[in-house]
Structures are given as C-alpha cells and as structure tokens.
Length: 339
Ligand code: PHE
Image 1 (cartoon, protein in one colour):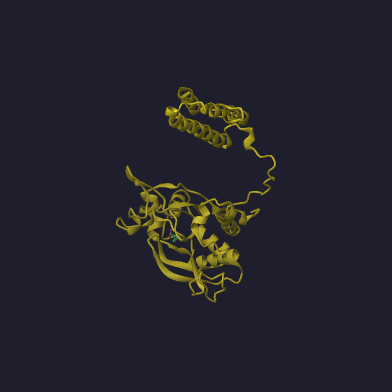
Image 2 (image 1 turned 90 degrees about the vertical axis):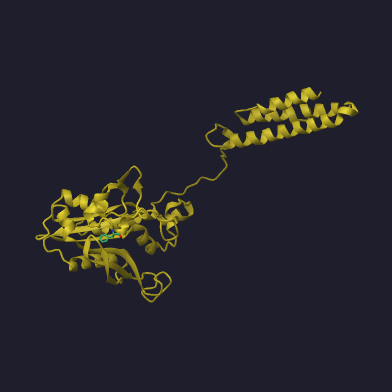
C-alpha cells in the first residue's frame, strides 16, 4: 500500500493541465467521494498496526500534495496570457473610462502654444550630448561644479558623452545651424544625478527659450516673460526678477511670479513670501554667441529655461514630483483634457 501511495505522490508532482476542466477531473480523480484518497482511507482500516503510523503519514502527504497541486494549477491558469477561458470574467462591468493626457504633456502643450502665438518656433535636440554642447560652449569653466560627477550622468567609457542636464544644450545646436534672427523654444527631457524625493527627480522636463537678433534687450525678455506668466497663471499675475548667475547668460536672473495659490498673501506653497520661483533667464553671454559663430557686436539675445514639472506643480497643486512618473491611474484620471 505504501508503494502505491508513493507512486501517486510522484504522479501528482509531475501533473500539469491546460484547462479548468482537466483540473476538475484531477480533483475528482484524487479527492472525489469515490476518488483515490477515499479508497485508500477505507483500505487503511486493514493496515497492520506496525505500519499504521507510517502509512497514515504518507496518506496525509498524498492529500496535501493533491490539494497543493490544485491551488498551484488554479493560480497559473488564472494568469493572463495562459489561455484559460475561465480567467475572463464576462460579468464584470465595462471599464468605460477614456484615456487622458499626462499633466506634463498638457503643461508642455500649453507652454509651446503660448510661445507659438508670439512667433516662437518649437525645436528639439538630442538627450545624449557631448560635454561641449552641455557645458563647454555654454561657457562653463573646466572645473565648474556643475560638471561634477554628482550632478551629471556620464557614460563610463567616455566622459565626453553624457545625458544632458538642461535644455540649454539645444541653444548651441540651434545657433550653430541658424543665423539670427532666432526666436525658438526647445522642450525636452533632462537628467541629473540626484536623489529622488518629493521635490527632485533624476529625470525631469524643461522648456528653453532663445531669441537672438539685432537690438534684443532685457526689456524684451521681461515683457515676454510677463506675457507668458499671465497667459499661464492668469491676468492678475505679477512678476519680479532677482539677480542670479548662469555661466551662459550675463546679466542673469531668476523669475518669480506672485503666488497663484494665495494670490500673494502668503501660504505654505510660497513659504509665506507671496512669491514662487518659476525659471532662470538672462541675456545670452557674448562668448556663447561667438562660440556658435554669431557676431556678438551686431547681435544680442536673451534665453530662459523653466522646469515643466514645476509649472505643472503650481498650476495643479501637485505636492510630490514622483507622482508624475508613477503612472497611478487615480492621479492621471484627474487631468482629463482635450488639449
Ligand atoms: N539651464 C538653466 C538651468 O537648467 C536655466 C536657464 C536657461 C538659465 C536659460 C538661463 C538661461 O537651471
């Protein structure tokens, strides 16, 4: 009897099936009222006292093996793509939700639309860059901390190749190929070697702006940014420029807008200052123009760069940058938009 039981256990271990019907047959065969286990248990009465203990243990093993096999098979049949018709529940209600654009796409489209309306073309550049386009031609000194391994993702075998840390690299590419007048924006993905938190991510998106022509002034920059801020955040929006530093612009500034959440009265989004920073900007450094073969005696230009995540955060009150990349349907569903 013990050998018989061992043989059944071995059979069960190699058993597989393709459908729920086959599995049900298996269940009846072993565990049904007139199944093998029932038969063995009734024969157990006649087992001699010396081998009762061992046979009893084996019988329990067989029962566990049969039950375990059924659970395993049910799981694998239930997995999609494994051909079980039973896995599709036809009684479930239809999911009639319509897809919607990602909040970052909505925001990028809105930004490009606002600038297109005043004559800016939309251009793109590569995400994998050389040191020259990301740093060198943008007037970053050789030992500038921004080139540090901590901020930039380099390709191990060739430190000249990197993932762009900002869209300013596209300024250089564009100016090399196009003589002034230039009026363009460059949206795209950028990469920085930063720890991921609610406020920072190693992948994010920027929109760069560039205008180069005869007599382009800081007043043009300021007026363009005022127009943008009011189109994006509403006609009541105020702006202020704070002096700043970027190697590729001189003078440089940071643009704050009056906090669109509290209207400038002070809240925890604007840290009770009434202002929130949205972008960096400045007049294109003459060295940068010359690096691209543009005569800096005859031409001047302005540039600005903003983070799309940041703009969308302020617009939609998103408190955690990680939400943009997690694809949580409950987050994404809130941005139903035709734009
Ligand atoms: N590239 C800068 C950054 O990523 C932003 C910037 C763009 C500043 C253009 C000035 C002019 O922070």
